[in-house]
Image (tube, rainbow, N blue to C red):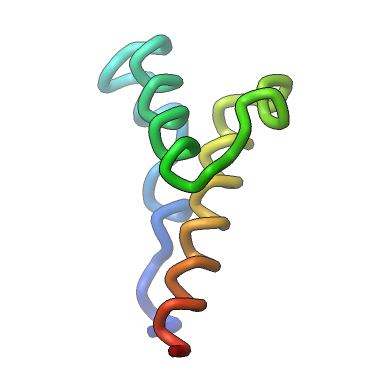
Length: 69
């Protein structure tokens, strides 16, 4: 699966912002963060792009962990 791009390679925060507006883009990222159990206080100072990359990284790690069992 090395030839398959990851979500973070395909989707960037700017895409969300362009499609849905800044407030909605942050709401989408925040929803993903909540699903992953990320406390908002820990990521509030990060940019939207950093937050999106962070949540994708955690989601990817979670999927890897699930497929190993």
